[in-house]
Amino acid sequence: MEEILSSDTAWRQLSQMFLAIFFFHSSEYVLAIIFHGKFNVPLSSLLISKQYVMAMGCCILEYLFEIALFPQLKEHWWISNIGLIMVVIGEIIRKVAIITAGRAFTHLIKIYHEDHHELVTYGIYRLVRHPGYCGFFIWATATQIMLCNPFCTLAFMLVTWRFFSTRIPYPTILFHLNVLSSKY
Image (cartoon, rainbow, N blue to C red; front, side):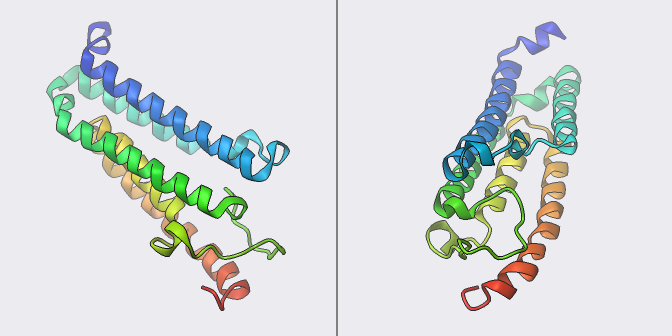
């Protein structure tokens, strides 16, 4: 196993994965501090739940299992490179969404109107209603494409799609349509 993990393929793909995870969460945290202040941003805003850790653990297990038994599966550089490009695209979409929304972007669903609330309809929000969710969906799926993990690619795609399909209607119905209906 040691010789497999020291291969160029494993080293490149796993280091890209860990760098993608580190950059995603550290940049989310830094942007949250910039827009909301250090004392209003707990470490829990890094969005690392038990389910997330389990999902990442599963993707590493799939990777290790497949590279040990089917190393040729991980040698499709063109697939891995498409995944890497998609990781960057997902990051850009999400970070542009956060920067565009500024203080209006939080990691918590708001159901009560506050004076500073406004519906963001400019920038990337003119093109996509939920660009933060879109960016994360692309990013999460792309991390698995980058690793050439067929099972986790499908699983990450389905789970994040389901998560956002149940999460998006909640604030839309309870908040946007009631409080900001004239702009929505």
